[in-house]
Length: 114
Image (cartoon, rainbow, N blue to C red):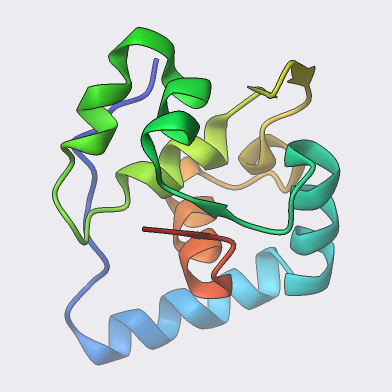
């Protein structure tokens, strides 16, 4: 369901700038924060064993063992449709962007972190 071999943030500065611009345009921060809070019931998420288990169940260790600074955690959150017993549409579906685009935007806004 969730691939954990994810791309890293690009190292090329121009590509990072282009990603940032695209993210701001496609997923405005104010709307993302509102959707994130409505979906997850919190202002932000820090990767912990408890959060990883809530998102992935028994396979949570694969997320905990994902290399830093991969976007594995951000991609899982971008595609999540359930958290803390609450069902919702995945953020990437709400904003009609790819899981990777949403993962980058979640990282840029600091809504998810390690």
